[in-house]
Image (cartoon, rainbow, N blue to C red; front, top):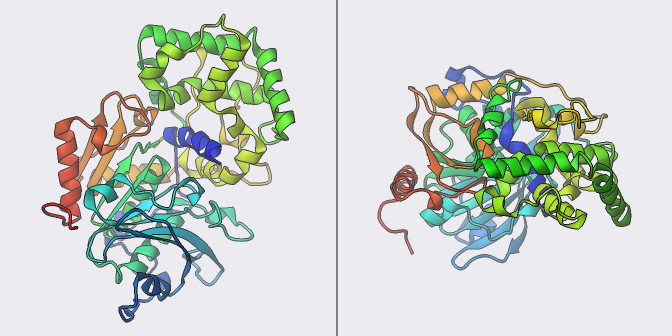
Length: 464
């Protein structure tokens, strides 16, 4: 399943979210006031019989099992009962999957918004803020991903506000067990989810670190991504990518599509959702510059094959860059929720390709309708992302945004504004979509680390 995660990361970098419900007023959001009726009751702390028993005593919480954990931690697999619709909690529930890492009830808690499902994450994984703070951590599987899906799935209840309410209820439920300060974090789509949670419930946590989080405020205008990619790398590197694109959709097109078709037939894979191997080939060639800079970056320029390379070398390089199996029905199905969000709220980049004039056969193939079965309606809602952007610039506080210099996600980044308080944007040189505070220049690294520790109320060295 790692193939599908690799595919989704690029999709979630260029355009994302617009709310499926009317955005609340800023005044409402600042009070954190969204659905008091759905908040779980405060839980009395049981006798000192271990953290497992205390977690199991939280109303709606179920301890599934204990996992292997890093030294000094305990790790559990949990589910937490959430309303399908937080506005109408009596209309059904689903079990949201969670993975907590318990260090000490006296340490800060890091809410790690995974962004996808937890199949992609090892139970002992620690996010960078968890490492810096020597804290506890709870990773959340997002609604409608993995096993955290209502049956049957009402897709209209998959939106950023409903997901933010999931996180809000979870914070309320676990704060009595973990009374120290909470920090939220996530990367790419998970980083975006952390910001959206803060917009609707700004006081749930003391601070947030969002890594590689795009901020597409106008899904109709993708020129920022085109300009960004036009400046990446050397002229020779860009020319090499263009030459490969033209070769694959030119004289090698039938050969490459045929090779993909034969591979799919051998493996039992199909292309019913996207339509055909030729459509997959055109789609991935269009996205190649974005995917290349997300994954390989500067280090990959010397590995781009020449157009005269043999088909084996060309196909192998292209497949490793765009991950062709991720476009099969088998791998698209588990991440339908990602494409649904892109097509209804988050938005997505459609890259311009004047260099491929005369070689394109499938107009509009970069739209999210390409990835989502026709049985699921898609109606884009353009208001959510501008609302999030305004909140960050006018009201956001205790926020760190960390971007890689070569990451297309920063073509449309989050920005602070006059109303932002203790909010910062950092750029890590020579890095791409996978970025850490540790990748920052020394001065920025020290500032970002100090801000995180200040928000978490951690002074001096971590407790043993």
